[in-house]
Length: 209
Image (cartoon, rainbow, N blue to C red; front, top):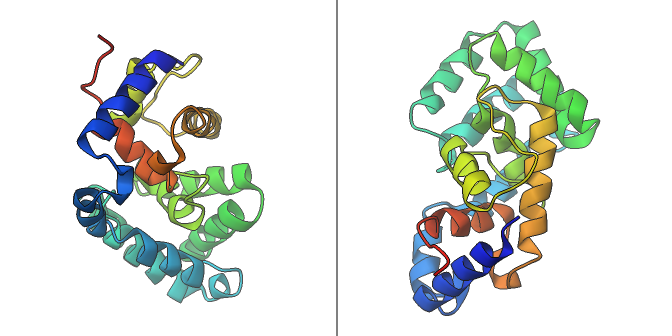
């Protein structure tokens, strides 16, 4: 990790937004993401008891993807149409994978979700990370491919090679790297991991002088 570049990005961000994410301009900007509402929705919709209802849970997964400002506009209708076209057994597999991902064995759930999405040609990083992003925002984040690739390159994250096909190994390594980077900057830059990722994205053109 290139800490000098990270500290330079931090300095530049605070020059532009002195109160970090509490700067009025940033508060206004963040409202469009409706983070708090989506976190509440995730906790209500994807609790262990809620996930017992297969059809309702599948619909809530569609709502989660559709409402997220971080998921591509191209992926939202594809995910919706794929889930709606699933048989009851396929929806059961989908919801079971989500249940395992959030509440059980994370690796097993990740691979199960990846498998069912692959059948519908939807093995996308955003779609396998969006649910934990909102359920565990202090720990997880949504993987946007361009941002991930740029962060790895700019901050010289060792041992990380981005590939379009999601893998659990990379998922864990990149998440760990992000959580390590958070420790190097002011707490106000990471009210949650999606916000911290936003900070990294917004300062991508900042270079050490």
